[in-house]
Amino acid sequence: MRIRPEKVAHLMRREVAEILQQRLRDPRISAMVSVTDVEVTHDLSFAKVYVSIMGSPEERASTLEALAHAAGFVRHELGPRLGLREVPEVRFIHDESLDRGARVEELLKRLHDDLPVEDEELE
Image (cartoon, rainbow, N blue to C red; front, top):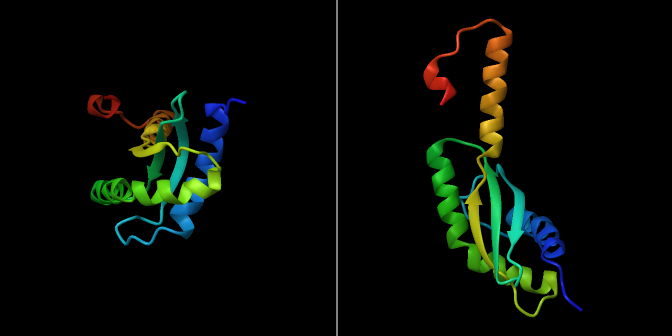
């Protein structure tokens, strides 16, 4: 029986979120971290975990660095939870889609309120 990468990704998303909230005790990791998506390769050897991080750019950088440092711990914690012989290698990536969405929403609000929108804001 072959395990589907989509099923593993869905399960990993839930479990990684729980591990980050309950098990990881690193002061560099902001409390406002959420797992937005997980992509797993077809051979289940590698997983990209997309995270949204609220805070200043410095806090985001610090949190991403701490998550990269904790990737081995997260992988170790995933082992018994996933029930796989080989647990995918985990890499954390900052998901900028929420930031872009908030930016677009702000621009639309400015247009709706007839406020000027600068050319630099459109880039």
